[in-house]
Amino acid sequence: MSPAHAQTRSDRTNSAISTTRQSSLTTIELHAGHGVSLDFRPTRETIRKAWLDDPSQVTLDFDDAICQNANRQNSCTASVIHLRRIQRLKFPNLPATATTLLTVMSDRNLYTFRLTFPNSGSPRYSAIAIQPNRITSTSVATRIRGSSGAELIEQGLQVAAARRLISRRDALWNRLESLITLVRNGVQVADAARQVGVSQQLIARLVEMGLKTQSV
Image 1: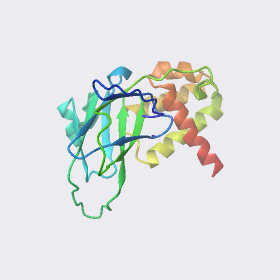
Image 2: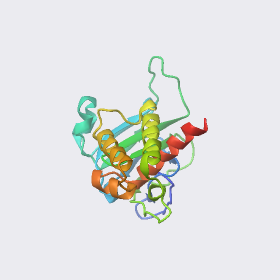
Image 3: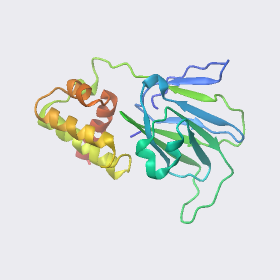
Image 4: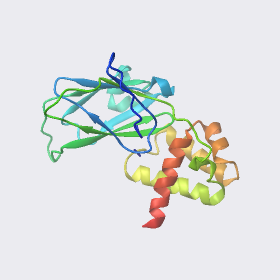
């Protein structure tokens, strides 16, 4: 599930970019000798887990040291991730790729970023601030309701699990299952989202994934 529709705002004084929540994949350039920080503080969300599809060229640092421990990532309470490009490492059975995906799971959302590794040019930014999205009256979450809506969300959740974007052990999974039950029982999605503490953007993306399963 992949910040997002990147509405970027260049800031020449601190080389920062502001980006909204995801509706499409945002690309982040990592230049040799430079890093990029992802700042989730504007969203007031807590980072629970982050992982790379191909870790051979990037290291992740967090403002909460617990997040570095893979066995304790569910205890992670970070709000900033620092990405640092390194010399490519060789891992057995891991094919070399020109780009990779970074997935970040917060207590309310899932984010994916495409990381690229330019060999020329200069860095255009050193930090990206993830901004809360402004919900519009045409949000998907306001149009999905009842048992059919619950089924779409559930199908999207299964797709996310199949892609290893979320697991049954995650607290977010339990919240989403509670939301599905509420929607199935007639609660409007927006109200259910507030009750369980998940964002309407996440629900919209799950619905989108659920719709794709029906078109296959």
